[in-house]
Image 1 (cartoon, rainbow, N blue to C red):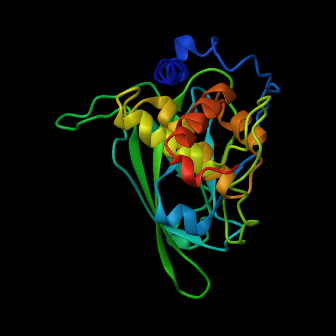
Image 2 (image 1 turned 30 degrees about the horizontal axis):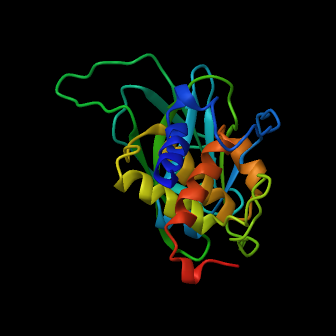
Length: 245
């Protein structure tokens, strides 16, 4: 019975089945388009950050909070998006990059990919150079943000024991969610390149930077049911002797 329950929970990773859950109905407030998604500088340089783009809209990567200027930009696949900056790179005053989807183009000899990467090299006031990497993720539907703001401030200590809104359940942590995602991929419930997996990883990055769980799922348009299912799966992998009483 336990294995069957886990499999039913993990079917929530399929967008077509998200409307059904054995965990009960959970209401999440309708997301509004937030100004910018805050990403801490150390996190942005140590991992690849997803930059979401929507048709007919531009998304920004903003370095004004860190005081860095953009010195070099490399877009791997230029067939689906274009970019520009708020100042010429040679002036050492560019602090923002605007990325916008376009109708697909064909370049002789070039290869394309659904999710391309973007490299940005910066220089701060102390002469320190940094390299940032981004995945350009094309989205449809209602936009949830207008881009990313890189922040040099240290976020509040992450709350790894945030309570998830599910009745009669023990506290489920961010570590449970991350463990559950690893288990789901390992067992073949989903694939590592599934768009929902990318959303879950982005959700974990947001919450570990201090964003409230409910707010994080709204920002990236992720079902709370998926988060809870993964957390429960992850907690089921903890040996009974180490589980909280």
